[in-house]
Image 1 (cartoon, rainbow, N blue to C red):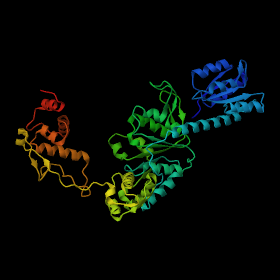
Image 2: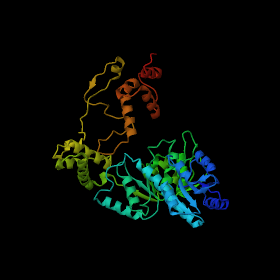
Image 3: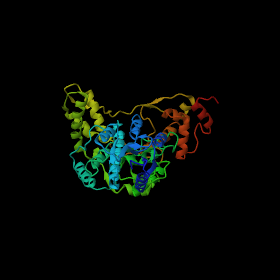
Image 4: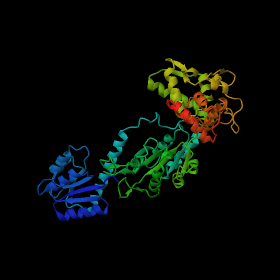
Length: 504
């Protein structure tokens, strides 16, 4: 709701009281006063959304309020009321900043029409102010590109879902274009003329996200100097995008569930229910079912969001789009940077097709932008312009033997950086593109255990070899359930002191 607090300045008690009752029945907070002097006192103490003012008051002209409000950065809409209408008076009031001009006696329908116009105008101003701040993270291009069957099926699903009012959960790997899918749903929906408000849940500090979502009242916390509408209120009549919804804190998830179920909220520090009419689209690059299983995400909120799930395919599953996307990005980015590029060479296309694209379309766009910048003017994009790292040979690593560790001498070993057999229960890591991919935490565990084994159990030497602190090494071994042992067993104090540069 855009309007909340309304001030009535009218010396006729019958008209003032009737207007107060009509507005209160519509759940506005209303104060009625009879003189210009009292009105100025109220205007100085608080912020008002709408003011009804009689042109003629016992202690002056109601138009004086227009002049008082002219220099304020945040000012209410003013509706002038008069029983002695004239064209000159109406023109003068509108010129001085009045929002509307009512002639007494007016009906309740006229008041409703004025309120509707004022609410729509206020909502428009607030949304435009929010959108004018811009979002530097917006990607270039706004359409879903691709000719593969997977992308055609995705576009068909978007068109079907957009016609409804259902909540949508867009899931996909980072860089696949979840936000573009969300914007496409918004543009093809019946809410396309309403606001589209994006909330990046991962970018907002945990202590502020509740205020960002639901707004706050003046004085509700330190620094809350004025009332503020939240993103859900700004999205009233339109669509809200909850980007990276998996990052929302558990205590906010409960309040978010209420908004999705009841379409109503309370501002931080407030006690009044505010009704909102919004369509919710949420995106995530995580598997929310796994997050629910780990108790990191509420199951009831997941069910509420997952009304219509949309899975965005990763680029490696639609490789027929890679060359097409590369050409589109090349043309756009060449214009952006003022570079003449004469196509993409065959070797470059082959390298693009062979790459696994863990960063998906966003990675491809960045790679092509780098290639366009490095390409000679008028030349073709070549494989060397892509910046892909060549597969490197095994680099000899100095691995000490237990005797060498105790003497402080380290001899380079050129045949193998680690023992040929991994610790019991650990599978050796597979090269990229060959065999199963080992999770990062398992690779880390394997590297630490192999380093300790190679150093004969000397944790200090193993930590130095891996480039980590002894404290980190000790904590990791404790996490893996490895009992202290080896050449430096029982020397934790010395390890920590050596790590922190303290003499023992």
